[in-house]
Structures are given as structure tokens and as C-alpha cells.
Length: 249
Image (cartoon, one colour):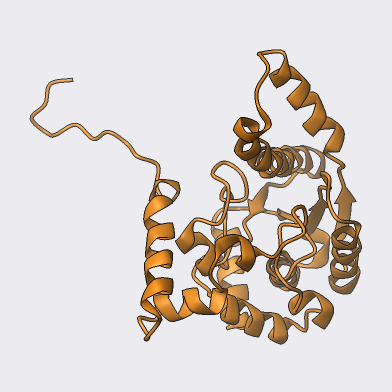
């Protein structure tokens, strides 16, 4: 699998005259596997990792460094905490909002600030290095199916080589790449809430895989996965209006 994906990346970059890639490095397995694939495909000199702490757990930043040291690509640290609070100060000027009303907006602001940072750095590196950089996504098939990502945040990218791979397939790929074990088998979490991704979802990634394979699964779990998918369908495709051929514009 590894060699096929590496060839895919190389062909895509050659066809589109691209020179480098920017990857957000969270300290988890998905971003580690993506960074490893692009490093092997393009060379470490054409991969730039960006760590973007924002009220984050220090261990995740340490793990990001482990990943960059292991694969040898450059890792830049851009602390977004001050930017995050500056944004919220502007929102507070609009009125006195209750914490419960701000909660979802605040949670999703962080990945949106991170994605804005990745695109900014891709443009800056393109200008300074005189070659075109793009942003790599790190979401896997299980997360995407149930909508466990932020629209306009970690759900946005120019290329995503994990989008059609389940979590177990990502782990197998990580084993091929020899991603450090403490990263590859780390419990997935957002690095902010102190609870795991699976606890937040209410289902396990293995259960999502089982559902996707149409294998037997407890009805309660199956219904929950179906409901998550339906609730988040709006994230999968931007709705557009298409006038019929005989309509006058």
C-alpha cells in the first residue's frame, strides 16, 4: 500500500507542477503517517510540518517533535493561543453571550485558525522558495464518514491520501513506514478536552469499520453511526444550485 500511495503523490505533484507540501502535525498517528508518506515521496526538504498549539497538551507538542525528528522534515511552531483570545475579545464586543452558546463556536474556531495558518504558510513558502506548496489533509475514512471534523477547519485540504483508508488501514500503513510506536498506537484525542475521540463519538473506530464493511453489529451501535453520518452529510459536499437547461438565466 505504501508504495502505491507514494507513486500517487509523485504523479500528482509532477502532473500539477507542485514543489512542496505543508502538513499540520498534531502529534497523532494520522498526521505522522501523512508526513511520513510525503517525506518518502517528495524528500524531506520539500515537506514542512506546522505545530499549532492553542490551549494544547504539552505532550502533543513533544510528540510532534518526535515525528519531525524521525522523518527529518522541518517543523515550525506557530502558537495560536494569543490569536484565539484576540478573536474572542472581538466577539465579546458584540454582546454578552452565555458560555453554553459559545461552546460549539469556540471549539471549532481552533481548527479553523489552524487551517488558515496552514494555507498562509503554503502561500508564504511558495513565494519564498519559488515553488508551489499545497496543504495536505490528515482525516481518515472513519472520521470523515461520521463527520468527526470541522467544516472549514481540519476538513479542508488540497490533497488527502488517508480519506479512503480506515483507522486499521492507517495503522498498517504506519507500520510499513515504521512510525514510532508511541505515536502510532497513541489513543486518538483532540488534545484539548482530556477525553478520547471514541469517548466523544460514543462509538469506537472498530465499530465504524465494521459498519462500513456491512458486517454484523449491535443495532444500537449501527443506528448511532447511521445517525452521525446523516447529521453530518452537509459537511461532505458543498450544496450548489444547478439551473435546468431550459431555464432562462
